[in-house]
Image (cartoon, rainbow, N blue to C red; front, side, top):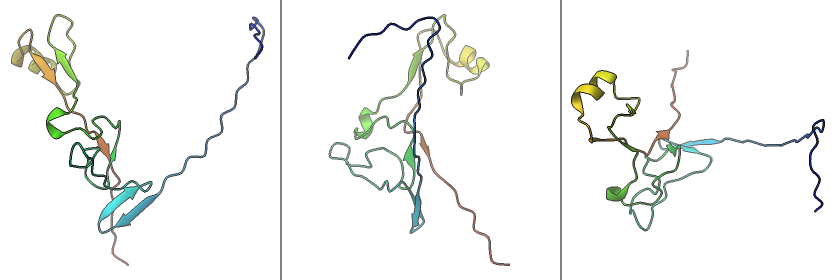
Length: 120
């Protein structure tokens, strides 16, 4: 492959073609998204994504981890004033001391909901 340095007036054009497709399959009151089903993992013994059947894991953290060893976000309260969005400023100042560890949880999931309307 030859090496060519770009100049000040050079134009680079790039095209990306994508073909997205989504499919929902509903059976027995459970919604399956893009043919994802309940997968039991050898390590966790539970659903490998730690979300209920019919849900999708948004970030796919904690894949096939035992329930007691899940990763989670955390912050240590110090002078930086960093906090999670779900903790109010008042709660941050009054409920936590310097050096306390603030923790959150993963297994964030999403699903679709259905509305059934009776025939008119």
